[in-house]
Length: 400
Image (cartoon, rainbow, N blue to C red; front, side):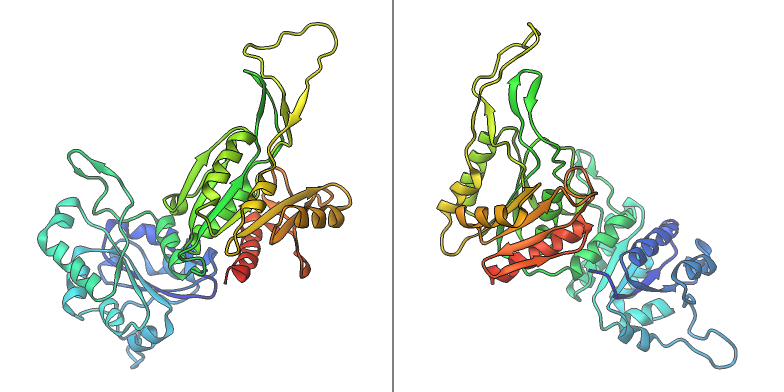
């Protein structure tokens, strides 16, 4: 949600100043407009020419840019910005900000800023742990500023990574999260994702090509919007981003029966469920305890029906709960999707078609239609992250 946002990036005299280039690149890639304000000490570590080339804007450093009376207005910058980010921020700059010592362009811009301010400290551990630094950070927090620190764990000998600047991609993600819509705050969303594997013997199974990418994108989109998310995932290689993984309770399963058990249990506490998993409809009636050896030219496997997760949750659904299903079809798409919508008591169904090349299994893109009792909405081919936004927008409308 950084698209169109105006960001003032403050850079101070730290060895981590070179990382500002990666921050700028990440912000611009996300659609933001960046104006750099750098301290005189900051220019000792990175040149304004480099920063200007990245932002396509002149770098602001001094109050007066020329000797003809032209001056840089910190007040205008404070009114222009949607956010101010100071990264890296040294202990010296922290102290000046906390005490209003306006002796350079960066501090005067900070004092004039009407938008939220984010601070990424950068210093050695001793300086970081000093009571003065800690007091300054607490004071800045009290003024409403947000401190971005590394999301490191703890070592027996002390705090790991404290004092060093957070990595650029995480800083950009922090700002992106701040501006993200929070229209699912307070909601609990359950999502199923990936395939299920139905064992034939210890080394063989019945499965499908589902990568889990769509379900994982849905889980992350819900988390970004403030929801508590339970993700029930079949065996996939997909991974959650570090930014959102802490907000998502991931339950790993393998078979349909395991997914069914988890889904029935978790849906009782959910406001909505999105059934994105490609669940096997059948499983072998018997699973061999040892690898089946080849004997003769044929082998028969007797299959029995698996539990219908969508149908069971549809029966469980209360008046306040919502249920979203997926339909992957190869023919008669509309007719088959409408039958599933009614039969399984879904609020809407997301239709995929294998006739749309470069979508569905293993792809990073998808092209969907959303079908409900109110009708059908068709969408263009997009990345699965963008498709997740469309689906969650539709869910939010019926959760209000």
